[in-house]
Amino acid sequence: MGLAVPLYVVAMDLVLLLAVGYALAFMARRMNRYDPELNMMVKYSVIFLSIAFVGRLTDLIDDFCCTSDFYYFQWVTYFVSIIGVIYSVVYYVRLMENRYLPAPPKAGQKSALGAHVVFSKNRLLDVIELLKSANFPVLAVTRSPGMYEGFDNVSTVWVTQVSGGVNPTALHVLHDVILRFVRDNPGSAVLIDCVEYLLLYNDFRTVFKFLTNLKDHVVLQHGSGLVIFVDDSVLSEQEKALLLKEFEPL
Image (cartoon, rainbow, N blue to C red; front, side, top):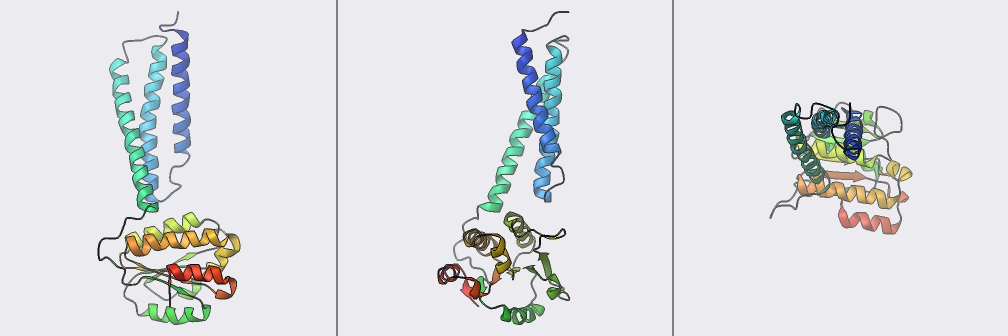
């Protein structure tokens, strides 16, 4: 039986089928790896790419036989998959904008807690005592989660290289965890008591950009508070001055 269409059309259909199949396998391997919002985008992509793959497969079959049998089915799969992929891309872009592009604060909007820096670890216990009577949720990003045990309003994120915590080089993961917390808990506060540890694995410029980006999101966009603790003996005068431009001393 001869081909129903020219060979170059078969070649193009095969390449498209393989391309869609690769994209489908790529997204399928990432199912349930991320937070719920990003996982939803991955699930949408897998569904619509699966529809596209079936459509491309029937198109390739059409090259050999049954040219008219699949016409309406292919039209529906193309329409649904294209709309679905467009939706998935828009969903992803909006998700990234919400996470990494802080919305400008409304006129007169100001965080009740603000952004503060504490240049002495010795004051950490005093602040913890104050948090004990606080009536708002707190997220502590820390090397010592046990220090916060007993506080019903305090959740912790353990920064460590061992399993069960967040690696100190994975600042983007810390960023996402913190943003999810303040989105879910309006008027909350975030404490970071391990800046020195972050500086062991990242240069100051990287950590400073991480902290200022957090400030924009946590304080200006969500109206929560951000307090960072760092021993000033590990900082140069220039680095300390940069922190003081962004954070009020506490």
